[in-house]
Amino acid sequence: ENELELADHVELAEFFRKTYGPTGVFNAKPFEGSRSWAGARPELRAIAYDSSGVAAHMGLLRRFIKVDGVDLLVAELGLYGVRPNLEGLGIAHSIHVMFPTLQELQVPFAFGTVRPELRKHIARFGRHGMVTILSEIRVRSTLPHARIDLPPTRVEDPLVIVLPVGRSMSDWPTGTMIDRNGPEL
Image (cartoon, rainbow, N blue to C red):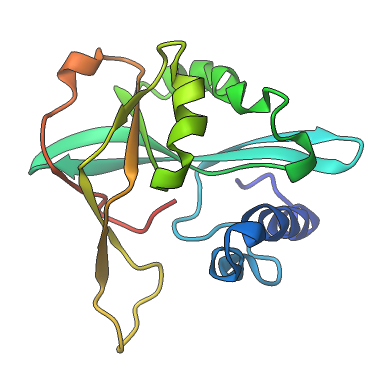
């Protein structure tokens, strides 16, 4: 993250506005100006470039979450995007590129959340056995900015994505509530 220059943030912010904007104006709003993150700022980024600029992006942040009260170190994956003209070309398999980095970080699991509408997309990716999709799990997150007109946390019902890195999926705690202990990546 420290290697990014202002021009990189500007380019990434534009990429996210164009990538997330078609899913709703509200989804593009966090990326106004030169802000290249939506909630928590990532620790690491995997950025794919081609001759047209940013082609794909995935962010990573190590954090402790609680699964029904059990503390668990994870690498949260988020800020995922593929330039619209490249969708369907298999670039989503970029997680394979991130796997050695996840192993170097010595985290037991990678974790992320997606909208339920992305189930088919994630299921296609997960058919190779790398990820497990969990549903009917609520996720509590803090808002990225404290506001006097809103509660400090929100609870959502996303699809939870888990990628075993240093431990097996059988070691993932069972539970129906994940406390992110911070804002969504």
